Image (cartoon, rainbow, N blue to C red; front, top):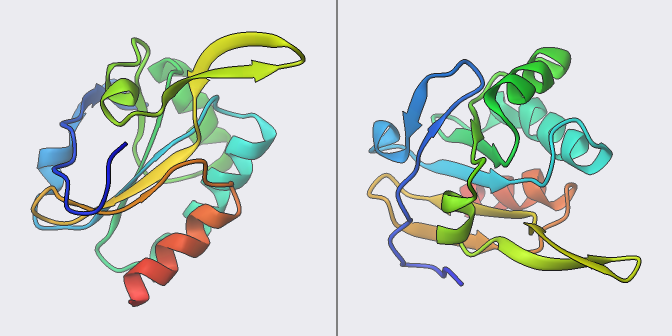
Length: 150
């Protein structure tokens, strides 16, 4: 698991508009990278909309969402809720694996692989400031605001 002070794994994924986005392009700015299981599901919608609601309160900090959804599905999600920040498509789970959030999960006795909802605050030099594994949709904006106020 990643922890404070670790170098954040690289990100190079397509966003909802089909543009390749990298973590490096936001150098010198703090970035919240949050991983969510599936676009336009109740928890993921709550989490993403709550983050969108605070984007004007976080200064130059960038918000980036990552899920296994295709760029087209990410675009539909962004358009439906007017989120206004990059939603990246990690269809092969490479970035999720690098961040240690691609996990074995279980529901109703069935095991499967999926995203463990998590968030990472990364400083302008690419180091992890905070790593929140198993974060709830409600906690994501709360923890981000607390971390930025500290």
